[in-house]
Length: 276
Length: 245
Image 1 (cartoon, each protein chain N blue to C red):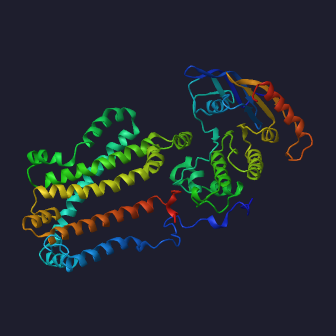
Image 2: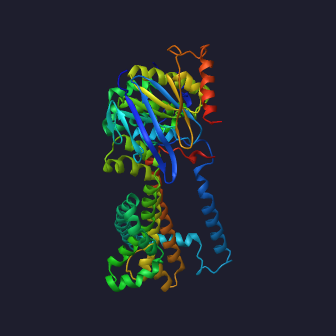
Image 3: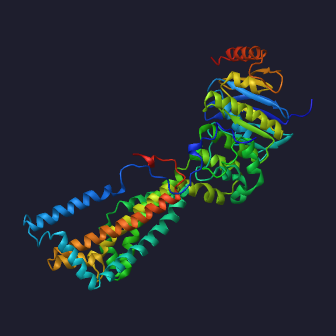
Protein backbone atom coordinates (compact mmCIF):
# COMPACT_ATOMS: atom_id res chain seq x y z
CA UNK A 1 0.00 0.00 0.00
CA UNK A 2 1.28 3.44 -0.89
CA UNK A 3 1.23 6.41 1.45
CA UNK A 4 -2.30 7.49 2.29
CA UNK A 5 -2.53 10.89 0.64
CA UNK A 6 -4.54 12.41 3.48
CA UNK A 7 -2.08 11.12 6.04
CA UNK A 8 1.02 12.71 4.67
CA UNK A 9 0.80 16.33 5.58
CA UNK A 10 2.61 18.02 2.70
CA UNK A 11 3.67 21.09 4.65
CA UNK A 12 5.41 19.01 7.31
CA UNK A 13 7.12 16.62 4.96
CA UNK A 14 10.79 16.24 5.59
CA UNK A 15 12.40 19.60 5.63
CA UNK A 16 16.15 19.29 6.06
CA UNK A 17 16.60 18.14 9.67
CA UNK A 18 19.42 20.60 10.38
CA UNK A 19 19.03 24.38 10.26
CA UNK A 20 15.42 24.98 11.17
CA UNK A 21 14.02 27.67 8.90
CA UNK A 22 13.74 30.97 10.72
CA UNK A 23 10.47 32.59 9.85
CA UNK A 24 10.37 36.26 9.04
CA UNK A 25 10.31 37.35 12.64
CA UNK A 26 12.27 40.16 14.26
CA UNK A 27 15.72 40.60 12.75
CA UNK A 28 18.77 39.05 14.40
CA UNK A 29 20.34 42.52 14.43
CA UNK A 30 17.91 43.51 17.13
CA UNK A 31 20.57 42.41 19.60
CA UNK A 32 22.92 45.16 18.41
CA UNK A 33 20.55 48.01 19.31
CA UNK A 34 21.29 48.16 23.04
CA UNK A 35 25.12 48.03 22.77
CA UNK A 36 25.15 50.62 19.99
CA UNK A 37 22.95 52.99 21.98
CA UNK A 38 25.17 52.51 25.02
CA UNK A 39 28.31 53.24 22.99
CA UNK A 40 26.76 56.38 21.53
CA UNK A 41 25.69 57.59 24.96
CA UNK A 42 29.14 56.94 26.45
CA UNK A 43 30.87 58.70 23.60
CA UNK A 44 28.57 61.67 23.97
CA UNK A 45 28.97 61.93 27.72
CA UNK A 46 32.74 61.74 27.36
CA UNK A 47 32.87 64.42 24.67
CA UNK A 48 30.53 66.76 26.47
CA UNK A 49 32.47 66.42 29.69
CA UNK A 50 29.61 64.91 31.72
CA UNK A 51 32.04 62.45 33.29
CA UNK A 52 35.77 62.67 33.93
CA UNK A 53 37.48 61.07 30.90
CA UNK A 54 40.20 59.51 33.06
CA UNK A 55 37.50 57.55 34.89
CA UNK A 56 35.23 56.75 31.98
CA UNK A 57 37.09 57.25 28.72
CA UNK A 58 34.82 57.49 25.67
CA UNK A 59 34.58 54.39 23.44
CA UNK A 60 36.69 55.98 20.71
CA UNK A 61 39.57 56.27 23.16
CA UNK A 62 39.13 52.70 24.32
CA UNK A 63 39.26 51.65 20.68
CA UNK A 64 42.47 53.61 20.23
CA UNK A 65 43.95 51.95 23.30
CA UNK A 66 42.99 48.56 21.87
CA UNK A 67 44.78 49.47 18.66
CA UNK A 68 47.90 50.50 20.59
CA UNK A 69 47.78 47.35 22.67
CA UNK A 70 47.44 45.32 19.52
CA UNK A 71 50.84 46.58 18.44
CA UNK A 72 52.31 45.84 21.85
CA UNK A 73 51.51 42.15 22.10
CA UNK A 74 47.81 42.09 22.82
CA UNK A 75 47.59 38.86 20.85
CA UNK A 76 49.88 37.26 23.41
CA UNK A 77 47.57 38.26 26.25
CA UNK A 78 44.51 36.98 24.42
CA UNK A 79 46.26 33.74 23.50
CA UNK A 80 47.49 33.17 27.06
CA UNK A 81 44.01 33.67 28.49
CA UNK A 82 42.30 31.62 25.80
CA UNK A 83 44.71 28.72 26.22
CA UNK A 84 44.15 28.70 29.97
CA UNK A 85 40.39 28.68 29.45
CA UNK A 86 40.69 25.93 26.89
CA UNK A 87 42.92 23.76 29.08
CA UNK A 88 40.85 24.34 32.22
CA UNK A 89 37.58 23.74 30.42
CA UNK A 90 38.88 20.56 28.80
CA UNK A 91 40.13 19.14 32.10
CA UNK A 92 37.18 20.26 34.25
CA UNK A 93 34.56 19.49 31.63
CA UNK A 94 36.10 16.11 30.80
CA UNK A 95 36.17 15.00 34.42
CA UNK A 96 32.66 16.32 34.92
CA UNK A 97 31.29 14.32 32.00
CA UNK A 98 32.83 11.12 33.38
CA UNK A 99 31.80 11.63 37.00
CA UNK A 100 28.41 13.09 36.07
CA UNK A 101 27.68 10.09 33.88
CA UNK A 102 28.63 7.72 36.70
CA UNK A 103 26.38 9.56 39.15
CA UNK A 104 23.56 9.72 36.61
CA UNK A 105 23.77 6.03 35.81
CA UNK A 106 24.23 4.51 39.22
CA UNK A 107 22.16 5.33 42.26
CA UNK A 108 24.92 3.94 44.44
CA UNK A 109 27.45 6.31 42.88
CA UNK A 110 24.99 9.15 43.31
CA UNK A 111 24.58 8.46 47.01
CA UNK A 112 28.30 8.05 47.40
CA UNK A 113 29.50 11.09 45.48
CA UNK A 114 26.75 13.61 44.95
CA UNK A 115 26.60 15.05 48.52
CA UNK A 116 30.34 15.71 48.44
CA UNK A 117 30.21 17.42 45.08
CA UNK A 118 27.21 19.51 46.11
CA UNK A 119 29.17 20.69 49.15
CA UNK A 120 32.22 21.48 47.03
CA UNK A 121 30.00 23.33 44.60
CA UNK A 122 28.91 25.67 47.37
CA UNK A 123 32.47 26.91 47.93
CA UNK A 124 32.96 30.37 46.41
CA UNK A 125 35.54 30.32 43.63
CA UNK A 126 37.85 32.82 45.30
CA UNK A 127 38.12 30.66 48.40
CA UNK A 128 40.18 28.19 46.37
CA UNK A 129 42.75 30.78 45.34
CA UNK A 130 44.93 30.93 48.46
CA UNK A 131 44.96 27.17 48.73
CA UNK A 132 45.89 26.69 45.09
CA UNK A 133 48.65 29.28 45.41
CA UNK A 134 50.02 27.49 48.47
CA UNK A 135 49.89 24.10 46.84
CA UNK A 136 50.78 24.84 43.25
CA UNK A 137 52.80 28.05 43.35
CA UNK A 138 52.09 30.94 41.01
CA UNK A 139 52.70 29.20 37.71
CA UNK A 140 50.16 28.04 35.18
CA UNK A 141 49.01 25.11 37.28
CA UNK A 142 46.89 26.98 39.87
CA UNK A 143 45.23 29.04 37.15
CA UNK A 144 44.28 26.05 35.04
CA UNK A 145 43.10 24.15 38.10
CA UNK A 146 40.92 27.06 39.23
CA UNK A 147 39.37 27.30 35.76
CA UNK A 148 38.81 23.55 35.75
CA UNK A 149 37.03 23.80 39.09
CA UNK A 150 34.83 26.53 37.69
CA UNK A 151 33.97 24.58 34.56
CA UNK A 152 33.42 21.32 36.43
CA UNK A 153 30.21 21.97 38.34
CA UNK A 154 27.82 23.19 35.64
CA UNK A 155 28.92 20.32 33.40
CA UNK A 156 28.63 17.80 36.23
CA UNK A 157 25.12 18.99 37.08
CA UNK A 158 24.06 18.94 33.44
CA UNK A 159 25.32 15.43 32.76
CA UNK A 160 24.08 13.88 36.01
CA UNK A 161 20.65 15.48 35.84
CA UNK A 162 20.37 14.83 32.13
CA UNK A 163 20.93 11.10 32.50
CA UNK A 164 18.89 10.80 35.69
CA UNK A 165 15.90 12.50 34.08
CA UNK A 166 15.76 10.41 30.91
CA UNK A 167 12.18 9.37 30.24
CA UNK A 168 11.55 5.94 31.80
CA UNK A 169 9.21 5.17 28.93
CA UNK A 170 11.98 5.40 26.36
CA UNK A 171 14.26 3.26 28.51
CA UNK A 172 11.51 0.65 28.62
CA UNK A 173 11.32 0.57 24.84
CA UNK A 174 15.08 0.14 24.69
CA UNK A 175 14.98 -2.69 27.23
CA UNK A 176 12.43 -4.50 25.10
CA UNK A 177 14.89 -4.25 22.25
CA UNK A 178 17.31 -6.30 24.34
CA UNK A 179 20.02 -3.64 24.53
CA UNK A 180 23.14 -4.35 26.57
CA UNK A 181 23.83 -1.84 29.35
CA UNK A 182 26.59 -0.29 27.28
CA UNK A 183 24.48 0.21 24.18
CA UNK A 184 21.65 1.47 26.37
CA UNK A 185 24.00 4.22 27.49
CA UNK A 186 25.28 4.95 24.02
CA UNK A 187 22.07 4.69 22.04
CA UNK A 188 19.47 5.98 24.47
CA UNK A 189 20.74 7.60 27.66
CA UNK A 190 23.40 9.84 26.14
CA UNK A 191 21.28 11.13 23.25
CA UNK A 192 18.34 11.69 25.57
CA UNK A 193 20.56 13.53 28.05
CA UNK A 194 22.25 15.58 25.34
CA UNK A 195 20.16 18.75 25.73
CA UNK A 196 21.02 18.95 29.41
CA UNK A 197 24.66 17.99 28.78
CA UNK A 198 25.07 20.74 26.22
CA UNK A 199 23.47 23.32 28.50
CA UNK A 200 25.94 22.24 31.18
CA UNK A 201 28.88 22.55 28.77
CA UNK A 202 27.75 25.98 27.69
CA UNK A 203 27.42 27.20 31.27
CA UNK A 204 30.73 25.55 32.13
CA UNK A 205 32.48 27.40 29.35
CA UNK A 206 31.19 30.78 30.43
CA UNK A 207 32.19 30.04 34.02
CA UNK A 208 35.63 29.04 32.76
CA UNK A 209 36.06 32.56 31.37
CA UNK A 210 35.02 34.07 34.69
CA UNK A 211 37.37 31.89 36.69
CA UNK A 212 40.17 32.70 34.27
CA UNK A 213 39.88 36.38 35.21
CA UNK A 214 39.83 35.52 38.91
CA UNK A 215 42.96 33.44 38.44
CA UNK A 216 44.81 36.06 36.44
CA UNK A 217 43.89 38.92 38.72
CA UNK A 218 45.93 37.35 41.47
CA UNK A 219 49.20 36.42 39.90
CA UNK A 220 49.94 36.67 36.22
CA UNK A 221 52.36 38.37 33.92
CA UNK A 222 50.26 37.80 30.85
CA UNK A 223 46.61 37.55 29.98
CA UNK A 224 43.53 39.69 30.07
CA UNK A 225 43.31 39.50 33.85
CA UNK A 226 46.86 40.85 33.99
CA UNK A 227 45.80 43.74 31.73
CA UNK A 228 42.99 44.53 34.16
CA UNK A 229 45.40 44.66 37.10
CA UNK A 230 47.93 46.59 35.08
CA UNK A 231 45.34 49.16 34.06
CA UNK A 232 44.23 49.63 37.64
CA UNK A 233 47.79 49.99 38.97
CA UNK A 234 48.70 52.57 36.34
CA UNK A 235 45.32 54.31 36.68
CA UNK A 236 44.49 53.64 33.04
CA UNK A 237 40.72 53.14 32.90
CA UNK A 238 40.99 52.83 29.12
CA UNK A 239 43.13 49.68 29.43
CA UNK A 240 40.73 48.19 31.96
CA UNK A 241 37.81 48.91 29.65
CA UNK A 242 39.68 47.54 26.65
CA UNK A 243 40.27 44.26 28.53
CA UNK A 244 36.62 44.15 29.58
CA UNK A 245 35.50 44.63 25.98
CA UNK A 246 37.77 41.83 24.86
CA UNK A 247 36.43 39.52 27.56
CA UNK A 248 32.90 40.24 26.44
CA UNK A 249 33.78 39.57 22.81
CA UNK A 250 35.69 36.37 23.49
CA UNK A 251 33.02 35.07 25.83
CA UNK A 252 30.31 35.83 23.33
CA UNK A 253 32.32 34.24 20.55
CA UNK A 254 32.82 30.90 22.31
CA UNK A 255 29.24 30.93 23.53
CA UNK A 256 28.04 31.41 19.97
CA UNK A 257 30.13 28.44 18.91
CA UNK A 258 28.52 26.34 21.63
CA UNK A 259 25.10 27.58 20.61
CA UNK A 260 25.77 26.56 17.01
CA UNK A 261 26.84 23.13 18.17
CA UNK A 262 23.70 22.87 20.27
CA UNK A 263 21.45 23.81 17.34
CA UNK A 264 23.16 21.32 15.13
CA UNK A 265 23.12 18.39 17.53
CA UNK A 266 19.62 19.06 18.82
CA UNK A 267 17.84 19.69 15.54
CA UNK A 268 15.58 16.77 16.42
CA UNK A 269 14.02 18.59 19.32
CA UNK A 270 10.43 19.69 19.00
CA UNK A 271 10.76 22.97 20.81
CA UNK A 272 9.47 26.46 21.17
CA UNK A 273 12.38 27.70 19.05
CA UNK A 274 10.18 29.09 16.30
CA UNK A 275 8.44 31.56 18.58
CA UNK A 276 7.79 35.04 17.21
CA UNK B 1 -7.99 -28.11 21.24
CA UNK B 2 -4.33 -27.35 20.54
CA UNK B 3 -2.02 -25.86 23.15
CA UNK B 4 -2.61 -22.15 23.43
CA UNK B 5 0.13 -19.90 22.12
CA UNK B 6 -0.09 -17.76 25.20
CA UNK B 7 -1.00 -19.27 28.53
CA UNK B 8 -1.12 -17.00 31.57
CA UNK B 9 -1.61 -18.28 35.09
CA UNK B 10 -1.29 -15.51 37.56
CA UNK B 11 -2.00 -16.22 41.19
CA UNK B 12 -1.10 -12.90 42.67
CA UNK B 13 0.36 -9.56 41.75
CA UNK B 14 0.64 -6.81 44.31
CA UNK B 15 2.30 -3.42 44.51
CA UNK B 16 3.25 -3.21 48.17
CA UNK B 17 0.13 -3.91 50.19
CA UNK B 18 -2.20 -3.30 47.32
CA UNK B 19 -3.37 -6.46 45.61
CA UNK B 20 -3.70 -5.73 41.91
CA UNK B 21 -4.40 -9.04 40.26
CA UNK B 22 -5.52 -12.37 41.65
CA UNK B 23 -6.20 -15.70 39.99
CA UNK B 24 -6.03 -14.52 36.44
CA UNK B 25 -6.06 -17.33 33.94
CA UNK B 26 -6.17 -16.63 30.29
CA UNK B 27 -5.24 -18.35 27.08
CA UNK B 28 -4.78 -16.91 23.65
CA UNK B 29 -4.52 -19.15 20.62
CA UNK B 30 -2.35 -18.60 17.59
CA UNK B 31 -3.83 -15.99 15.26
CA UNK B 32 -6.47 -14.93 17.75
CA UNK B 33 -7.36 -11.35 18.59
CA UNK B 34 -8.28 -10.94 22.24
CA UNK B 35 -9.09 -7.70 24.03
CA UNK B 36 -9.18 -6.93 27.73
CA UNK B 37 -11.73 -4.45 28.99
CA UNK B 38 -12.47 -3.26 32.50
CA UNK B 39 -12.64 -0.26 34.75
CA UNK B 40 -9.64 2.02 35.15
CA UNK B 41 -7.24 0.63 37.69
CA UNK B 42 -8.46 -2.95 37.40
CA UNK B 43 -4.98 -4.11 36.48
CA UNK B 44 -5.39 -4.58 32.73
CA UNK B 45 -2.22 -2.71 31.91
CA UNK B 46 -0.32 -4.48 34.68
CA UNK B 47 -1.47 -7.81 33.30
CA UNK B 48 -0.22 -6.82 29.86
CA UNK B 49 3.11 -5.69 31.28
CA UNK B 50 3.49 -9.02 33.07
CA UNK B 51 2.86 -10.90 29.85
CA UNK B 52 5.44 -8.69 28.13
CA UNK B 53 8.01 -9.41 30.80
CA UNK B 54 8.21 -5.76 31.81
CA UNK B 55 6.95 -6.68 35.29
CA UNK B 56 8.73 -9.69 36.67
CA UNK B 57 7.79 -9.66 40.33
CA UNK B 58 4.62 -11.65 40.57
CA UNK B 59 3.38 -15.03 41.62
CA UNK B 60 2.49 -17.01 38.56
CA UNK B 61 3.77 -17.88 35.13
CA UNK B 62 3.42 -16.91 31.53
CA UNK B 63 3.94 -19.56 28.89
CA UNK B 64 4.51 -19.01 25.22
CA UNK B 65 3.96 -22.16 23.20
CA UNK B 66 4.30 -24.16 26.40
CA UNK B 67 7.65 -22.60 27.25
CA UNK B 68 7.83 -20.57 30.45
CA UNK B 69 8.86 -16.97 29.89
CA UNK B 70 11.13 -15.32 32.41
CA UNK B 71 11.36 -11.78 31.17
CA UNK B 72 11.59 -9.99 27.89
CA UNK B 73 11.58 -11.96 24.67
CA UNK B 74 11.73 -11.08 21.02
CA UNK B 75 8.63 -13.18 20.38
CA UNK B 76 6.46 -10.78 22.35
CA UNK B 77 6.32 -7.11 21.47
CA UNK B 78 4.54 -4.23 23.14
CA UNK B 79 2.85 -1.22 21.64
CA UNK B 80 2.20 1.49 24.16
CA UNK B 81 -0.49 4.08 24.51
CA UNK B 82 1.99 6.72 23.36
CA UNK B 83 4.16 6.05 20.30
CA UNK B 84 7.36 6.30 22.40
CA UNK B 85 9.57 7.02 19.42
CA UNK B 86 13.15 8.11 20.03
CA UNK B 87 12.99 11.77 19.01
CA UNK B 88 16.62 11.94 17.86
CA UNK B 89 16.25 9.02 15.44
CA UNK B 90 14.58 9.11 12.06
CA UNK B 91 11.46 7.08 11.40
CA UNK B 92 13.52 4.36 9.70
CA UNK B 93 16.02 4.24 12.57
CA UNK B 94 13.17 4.00 15.05
CA UNK B 95 11.58 1.10 13.22
CA UNK B 96 14.86 -0.79 13.01
CA UNK B 97 15.99 0.20 16.50
CA UNK B 98 16.48 -3.37 17.68
CA UNK B 99 18.95 -4.05 14.92
CA UNK B 100 21.27 -1.26 15.99
CA UNK B 101 22.89 1.37 13.85
CA UNK B 102 22.86 -0.72 10.69
CA UNK B 103 19.15 -1.47 10.93
CA UNK B 104 17.81 1.41 8.93
CA UNK B 105 19.29 0.00 5.72
CA UNK B 106 17.32 -3.22 6.16
CA UNK B 107 14.93 -3.99 3.32
CA UNK B 108 12.14 -4.69 5.74
CA UNK B 109 12.07 -1.06 6.88
CA UNK B 110 10.85 0.16 3.50
CA UNK B 111 8.37 -2.69 3.27
CA UNK B 112 6.98 -1.96 6.71
CA UNK B 113 6.75 1.77 5.99
CA UNK B 114 4.80 0.90 2.89
CA UNK B 115 2.60 -1.44 4.84
CA UNK B 116 1.64 1.09 7.49
CA UNK B 117 1.04 3.77 4.87
CA UNK B 118 4.08 5.91 5.49
CA UNK B 119 6.10 5.21 2.34
CA UNK B 120 8.75 7.86 1.79
CA UNK B 121 8.76 9.10 5.38
CA UNK B 122 11.72 6.99 6.49
CA UNK B 123 14.02 9.97 6.85
CA UNK B 124 11.54 12.15 8.72
CA UNK B 125 12.05 12.93 12.39
CA UNK B 126 9.31 12.08 14.89
CA UNK B 127 8.62 15.78 15.50
CA UNK B 128 7.43 16.05 11.92
CA UNK B 129 4.76 13.39 12.33
CA UNK B 130 1.14 13.69 13.38
CA UNK B 131 -0.09 11.58 16.30
CA UNK B 132 -1.61 8.98 14.00
CA UNK B 133 1.54 8.76 11.88
CA UNK B 134 3.68 8.35 14.98
CA UNK B 135 1.52 5.46 16.17
CA UNK B 136 1.84 3.88 12.73
CA UNK B 137 5.61 4.03 13.14
CA UNK B 138 5.22 2.39 16.56
CA UNK B 139 3.22 -0.42 14.94
CA UNK B 140 5.88 -0.85 12.27
CA UNK B 141 8.54 -1.02 14.98
CA UNK B 142 6.48 -3.64 16.80
CA UNK B 143 6.34 -5.74 13.64
CA UNK B 144 10.00 -5.32 12.74
CA UNK B 145 11.37 -8.13 14.88
CA UNK B 146 8.63 -10.45 13.63
CA UNK B 147 7.14 -11.30 17.01
CA UNK B 148 4.51 -13.98 17.47
CA UNK B 149 2.45 -11.96 19.90
CA UNK B 150 1.78 -8.25 19.86
CA UNK B 151 0.55 -6.71 23.10
CA UNK B 152 -1.18 -3.35 22.81
CA UNK B 153 -2.06 -1.06 25.70
CA UNK B 154 -4.81 1.30 24.54
CA UNK B 155 -2.81 2.09 21.45
CA UNK B 156 -5.42 4.24 19.75
CA UNK B 157 -6.80 6.19 22.69
CA UNK B 158 -4.86 9.34 21.89
CA UNK B 159 -5.91 9.75 18.26
CA UNK B 160 -9.09 11.15 16.75
CA UNK B 161 -12.02 8.89 15.83
CA UNK B 162 -11.31 8.72 12.09
CA UNK B 163 -7.63 8.00 12.56
CA UNK B 164 -8.58 5.39 15.13
CA UNK B 165 -10.77 3.52 12.64
CA UNK B 166 -8.01 3.57 10.05
CA UNK B 167 -5.47 2.32 12.58
CA UNK B 168 -7.81 -0.46 13.71
CA UNK B 169 -8.12 -1.69 10.15
CA UNK B 170 -4.38 -1.37 9.69
CA UNK B 171 -3.76 -3.41 12.81
CA UNK B 172 -6.08 -6.22 11.73
CA UNK B 173 -4.52 -6.24 8.28
CA UNK B 174 -0.91 -6.43 9.43
CA UNK B 175 -1.72 -8.95 12.15
CA UNK B 176 -3.26 -11.22 9.55
CA UNK B 177 -0.47 -10.62 7.00
CA UNK B 178 2.25 -11.44 9.52
CA UNK B 179 0.34 -14.16 11.35
CA UNK B 180 0.59 -12.29 14.64
CA UNK B 181 -1.58 -12.94 17.66
CA UNK B 182 -2.97 -9.84 19.36
CA UNK B 183 -3.72 -9.21 23.01
CA UNK B 184 -4.96 -5.69 23.54
CA UNK B 185 -6.25 -3.51 26.33
CA UNK B 186 -8.90 -0.98 25.42
CA UNK B 187 -11.51 1.29 27.00
CA UNK B 188 -13.59 1.36 23.88
CA UNK B 189 -16.30 -1.33 23.76
CA UNK B 190 -16.95 -0.80 20.05
CA UNK B 191 -13.27 -1.16 19.34
CA UNK B 192 -13.13 -4.36 21.40
CA UNK B 193 -16.04 -5.89 19.48
CA UNK B 194 -14.79 -4.73 16.10
CA UNK B 195 -11.32 -6.17 16.55
CA UNK B 196 -11.68 -9.24 18.73
CA UNK B 197 -12.44 -12.89 18.53
CA UNK B 198 -12.97 -12.79 22.27
CA UNK B 199 -13.46 -9.94 24.73
CA UNK B 200 -12.32 -10.62 28.29
CA UNK B 201 -14.01 -8.52 30.95
CA UNK B 202 -11.98 -7.82 34.06
CA UNK B 203 -13.35 -6.80 37.43
CA UNK B 204 -11.41 -4.72 39.91
CA UNK B 205 -10.04 -5.11 43.42
CA UNK B 206 -8.42 -7.47 42.87
CA UNK B 207 -8.39 -7.74 39.11
CA UNK B 208 -9.53 -11.02 37.71
CA UNK B 209 -11.23 -12.23 34.54
CA UNK B 210 -14.95 -11.95 35.26
CA UNK B 211 -16.48 -12.87 31.92
CA UNK B 212 -15.61 -13.84 28.40
CA UNK B 213 -17.62 -12.69 25.40
CA UNK B 214 -16.82 -14.53 22.17
CA UNK B 215 -17.39 -12.34 19.13
CA UNK B 216 -18.41 -14.46 16.16
CA UNK B 217 -18.81 -11.71 13.58
CA UNK B 218 -17.57 -12.43 10.06
CA UNK B 219 -14.10 -11.47 9.03
CA UNK B 220 -13.05 -9.19 7.48
CA UNK B 221 -15.03 -7.09 9.88
CA UNK B 222 -17.51 -4.51 8.64
CA UNK B 223 -18.26 -1.26 10.45
CA UNK B 224 -21.97 -1.55 9.69
CA UNK B 225 -22.38 -5.21 10.62
CA UNK B 226 -25.97 -5.62 11.89
CA UNK B 227 -24.92 -8.33 14.30
CA UNK B 228 -22.34 -6.17 16.07
CA UNK B 229 -24.68 -4.30 18.46
CA UNK B 230 -25.70 -7.56 20.10
CA UNK B 231 -22.09 -8.27 21.04
CA UNK B 232 -21.56 -4.70 22.13
CA UNK B 233 -24.45 -4.90 24.55
CA UNK B 234 -23.26 -8.25 25.83
CA UNK B 235 -19.87 -6.74 26.65
CA UNK B 236 -21.58 -3.77 28.24
CA UNK B 237 -23.72 -6.03 30.42
CA UNK B 238 -20.67 -7.98 31.47
CA UNK B 239 -18.90 -4.75 32.37
CA UNK B 240 -21.91 -3.67 34.39
CA UNK B 241 -21.92 -6.99 36.18
CA UNK B 242 -18.22 -6.43 36.94
CA UNK B 243 -19.12 -3.01 38.38
CA UNK B 244 -16.98 -1.21 35.82
CA UNK B 245 -19.61 1.55 35.72
